[in-house]
Length: 411
Image (cartoon, rainbow, N blue to C red; front, side, top):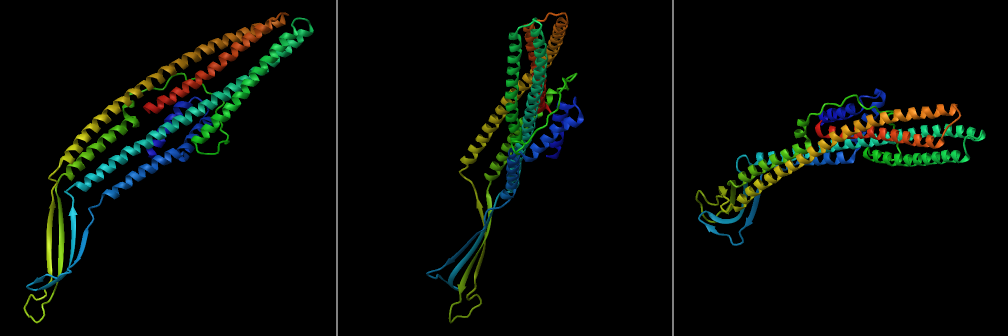
């Protein structure tokens, strides 16, 4: 379990935040550490695994020893005396290797249950990372809105000056103010959404809902994508679990074959004999001790043949389920790869558009110096600039979220 925790967690964090400052990138790693330690779902699967492992001790037993005591109400007379009571003990033993087969079967079930822990940890790390990127995008959008509100305040000052000299109308000022109100409203809504997402992340970490979460100031689009080895998909724990289940059915069939074999029993009967009165001979009153051997043979073994057939069908079912899940994971991986490429394309486009919007803004500012400015154009350019900035943030968010999905699938 330690090996999995270190390697998978490190890959998730390094692939996601290797392009930001080290001190900031450690925050996500700390969140993942806390989640892996505190999350109740992980604890649930670990307890299930321990319980499944403990079953090895349960099956490592032989059938109960049988003891019997009988008292002769009507004492039968024998040559050596009357029989008074009888004590018997009997122990049946399963066929050679049966107990070992049971242990192997239970161990294989525990191995399959262990894969649930690995899967749950991977999903938890992906969920924590995605929630973290959602918080980052929210904060980044709030920051952009704050900057645009300040920009509009600057434009409002210019508009007021223009109104005084008769180069703009009060309507222009009101439009700028209404646009500021809209941005402030959007910022307030984002602030509430941040608190909701923060609660979601804190629940994943199983801690107080209002615990503050610190996110990085800025995420950069990586210069190149990390290498994707699609062959690793075949080693995904969701698929390995089916292999473990398949092996458990093989062990179940071995048990079935062993249980269809005879059982051997050993026992001992002791009969107490009362001495015959008024008689004197060597065996007078001699108790009876009778060792016994018994064999239990499953003559009517239709049950075991049926179990063999069921095991074959269950293995076929598991094979089909594995192929179905592999197809689904391949589809999910392909979608994540393509959407990450789309995020990079979108980011480049938004960066180009944003530069052009900045150039248009500079032209408008210079036109104010010559005494002419159209505040409708100002609002249009500002609205486009805000749109491009928001889309750029969403492109970065989408890139890292899709990278998280890819990491879940192939690392």
